[in-house]
Image (cartoon, rainbow, N blue to C red; front, side, top):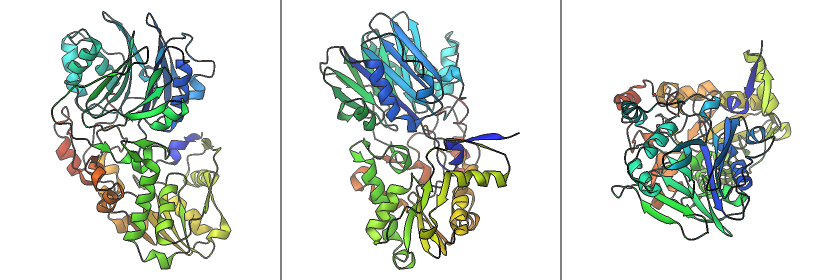
Length: 492
């Protein structure tokens, strides 16, 4: 009996994506359709499930399901016309990938209707759930998002903005939120700004999105990013939104560096930085740190598509020509394959195929964005070696990943991170490269420029966590010793 190997399984040597959220409020625009367009642009952030909630001031209509956006809405969008909507695409960094865990979540309570879409992981969800359960709350899902909803609706304040401000002070971790009430759209970002969230302007309304590329898709003009710790409340009519900070204490930004390395689309601008230009700069740093390759290699390839922009940057800086030496079959999203190594290798060849005239007898530098578990790089290098490559030098545009993430990235447990358990030489031998070179942490900081690098979270590289999980008291020692990170499989 065979297995189905999906796109994300083929690229299992990558950090898991997060989630994408989108929201819109407008009296005259087709809000459900705009939300669909926005989510379509964010599909790279989550492919497991999708949903849209629409409100018209009196009622809410929600449609959710498993699969890609085109699967979930194959038979149409929510029927309610409405004047406001939020949407979500999901990758389960915590909690099972099952129908009950799809978003947006919607509840009716004494204050009306509320729908919520969440990107990120809470770090005190167990403590929150215990406290809420002691007060009589019960939960239908395994998502931390449900605890967020419960905290908000149980807040004593009456106005929605005040309710959110009161409740967010109890919540710790990574969260960018889009909320829908009967008369408002609300955007919230945690006080570290781990996950991105931005605001766009429509002709007579507003939109919020995980990435600016989604605003472009929906026809909204980018205005600004939501600041760390900020709550932005939008009302129908298009007037300027109300903005305030739920925590006026320490709001030191710690934006996720992997948004720039791998997650975000290259046409997005996040917290004032172009993702594309950031990756070009990372490739340039790789070239500066490895000047010997300029004379040693004939060409630079990328592992398509995630390594392409950095490979272009390497070529620009070194003068080594960037060539598309690996052809990617873009129609193999889901491949039926037998669970044997031989058959899995067939699956790799179905996905990628070397352009033989560019490979035979050549010394090649090949650029990828990261190595997590080391499961894919060796297969790709073997393809090139079998096609006649003379030398293969693997270049990684991020430093070695040594520590797990608690803020919404599926980097599993430390002992599964190959760089945390093996030396660079051992990894080189394992993947079959002539040399293996990572960009240095200093080089990555330079690529993101000195001003921005002070606002980034590099914890997966240096273990300097901005926030330790409150309800995992042994997490610091566990992360340092290689024990399990329990951020996966619980919560959301």
